[in-house]
Length: 251
Ligand code: SER
Image (cartoon, rainbow, N blue to C red; front, side):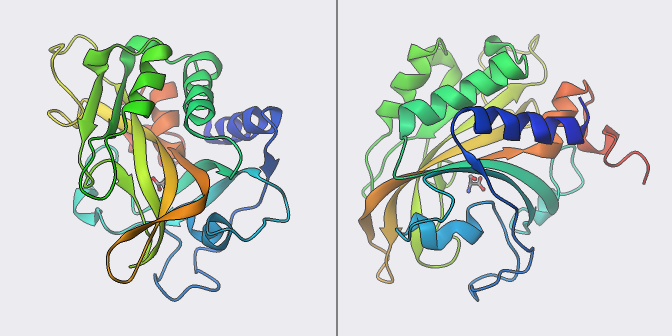
């Protein structure tokens, strides 16, 4: 599946799940001086994640071009880019963890044909600011992901946001694809990141980080997800590096 077909497949899937398809925003943030570039699909949506009604409704999806430099030292391996496309679906006070995770799982396994055995997931381990996300892990188990394929990790790994110093944020659950299923069964995305490619991140935005570094509960709980276009098509095309996909080969 080429990138163009994949992009449309994603948008069609979420349209069929009641999402309005909205356009991507400029790479230069328009009303936000907190960062130089649009870093994620949620970034242009921050006012709506903080409670402003979005004119297209409560279920949104799009493809957002992003520039991200916080992991620039990783660029040069098989999976990291500074400029990439992120496919995202959002719930603005509509569905919550169960539906978000179920839709991610259905898209990966039924629409894209990823074998469930090759998926690994991580969930937030909990700390003084927010509890351990056993709810997300229970949902994954109910979908057939065994406990041995679920890892709990701290904020450094399983927490998203805010984009700047303050704003919406929350625990997340990340989905990884096993590029070497014949590898040692006890390896995890944490112990061998080269083997497990992170493809998707479902963020459960339920906090608003304050200037004093505390986390106030948001009045409305939102979902923010991001699926990496380049990584996913590399998997679908059976290649072992983003640079082997049709997006990079002509260059
Ligand atoms: N904001 C999250 C991310 O960029 C999910 O979209 O990973």
